Amino acid sequence: MKSSIHHIELYVQNINETREFYEWLLPELGYKLYQDWKNGFSFKIDKTYIVFVEAEEEFKKYGYHRKRVGLNHLAFCVPTRNEVDNISNILLDKGMNILYENKHPYAGGEYHYAVYFEDPNRIKLEIVSEE
Image (tube, rainbow, N blue to C red; front, side, top):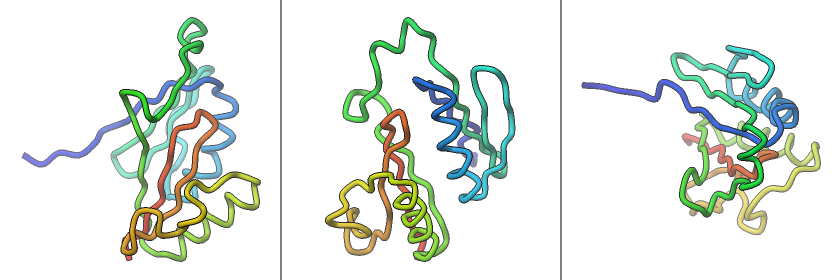
């Protein structure tokens, strides 16, 4: 049997901040808006989609941290190093922090050309080159 991820669903603190962030990032990676409703939205590429839903108020107080049990980060693959550099430049233009900046773009090792950063919910994201 061959399988792939159908979708990933992430609960977020503020749907508007999250949407503003992912509306520029995911189209850069080839995703298109797929679903849209009051408390959520999703972007799709091929058969896989990512869903963002605003958490209910009673659960927001616990917050998110990637070092707790649960999701550590999402990694996206792009074909070239140039595309990693393009995303890096957009992040800097938007005044966003690049994680592990002192090792960028080789924070994952000398053969792992990538940029690491966080979304508004502090979910770590990685864009890595196939080259």
